[in-house]
Length: 386
Image (cartoon, rainbow, N blue to C red; front, side, top):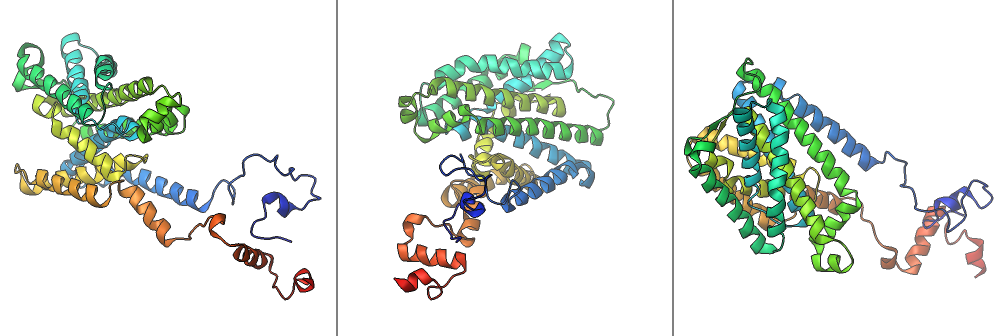
């Protein structure tokens, strides 16, 4: 007789030779096979979003909108790169713009001074960023919380002053002109190519994030985020794990900066080493959800689009900064875990509720078993005998 607490083994029947023995079947397989309803919905949503992103250059009505899409794509790359550190370990860095600026200036200087091919210079600049980040990370990760935030801000301010003062090398306040990799290409086609390059870089970041999230290394990083002292007491090499996450984050942020330099072609130290840019990374990741794969991407689409809209409508006013501050306040007050976790919790609240067997009485469990078996109390001969 089937009941609600039967397992797959019992459903096959005790005489089924293919049925595994009780207690030896290993982990239970998900009900409904590999393609469950939830996975199907996620797969359809992924394909639809990917098709929408890849078709954006064809749908853009003019080159300005296309260039705004490139800016949003660059924001998505920087926010996702920041999330390797902030999302996995919980360490909030407001100084990641330092790696963005180093990647951008490194790419430009390698092309200008060493005549290196554009995309080779881009990769070499990313490696240089990692080398610079090693001693910085060893020093910065000795502290936590607000102290770590202050150290990260100090680093980006130092680089801002150096880039402005070292005029003979970086161009100082006049900035640096980076030769473009496709000089004969018209502006709309230039935007189109770099939009796809940014999307490819973002896809690589998401793949690495996904692999880390399912690895032992990612589990250790999440243990650091939840309780670093307990993780260390349980044998997790917290210092090494944090440093590796910091270097991965710096590498991808540097690549995003180098890609921006190749696209835009004109570097300004005030923007490349801006604390405001680091704040944007944090806001985008928090808005979408730092613990979710697509959280920074969603946050970048919302914040980046809003910033471009305010700049278009209100020009050089600081209204976009006011709107950004208001958005940050709303996120902190109402969706501290981000939009994606909030939407998921909302669906669970109005969807079917799962209950633990500990919350069910014996009488309720017996009644549920009878309903699952299609029997009634009156029709059960054993119950009548009792």
